Length: 301
Image 1 (cartoon, rainbow, N blue to C red):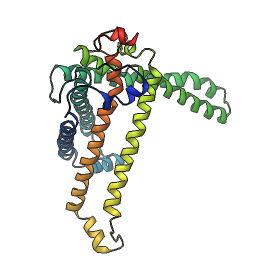
Image 2: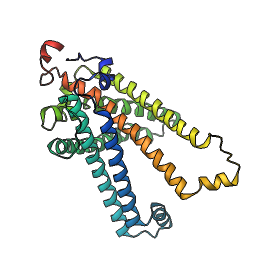
Image 3: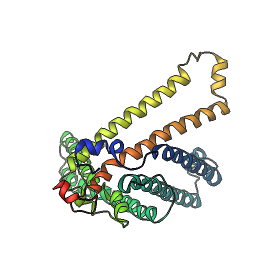
Image 4: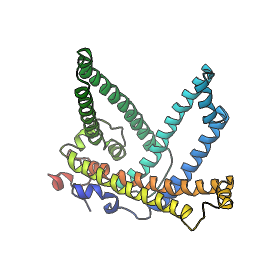
């Protein structure tokens, strides 16, 4: 059944969406497995290229790092960024197929993922452009004050206000463009700035939906972390006992604890990705320009 666009439907679209059941569990499992594989490969590459990141940091601090190592670091982080976007594209495509097309779970790297890869790269370039624009705006505002030796208190207050304005502008732009991925999956063609039309007149409901979801996820995250720490350190352990401290310092014990923490927190991250995609999906499905759900013009005009 078509859903009318509203704040509460956007915020809780992850729970109210139509389509086949049984998506979430395989999605979470696949996300955990792929995250574990990517993390293991990442650590292996770090060790292979640099020995260890801490050792590399020590070299940099002592000034003995070579240009070749600098090039390796830059190439490594560039590759890491690309891998991150590919990872996001694969799972974002799976989620949006579920929301927008009412499809069951599938993971892979086909046409949908390639299109979202382009969207992800456009987001990356957009973030860089927004950051540069903010720096330029800050320079234009602050340079005359610096030249006239203005009162430091006034300068500091103006910097705070400028930062708040920049933050609001960034949030506004991000919300307005948030439907790009969902539109791309819906129409099977790349969208980015056309998200503006799908979110027209919907900023505050979308902003409120994202804010509520962020609060929910943060509460869940800290509750999970607190529970894990309570289980590990608050389960009757005597942390003043040398044997207990030795057991906790054992590499096997630390490795097992890290692995369990990693799996659980990765599941929370996957759940966040799933619910975070809901508001954008509903905006795309109820696009006032048409192209979303059947009878959208009659339902939303």
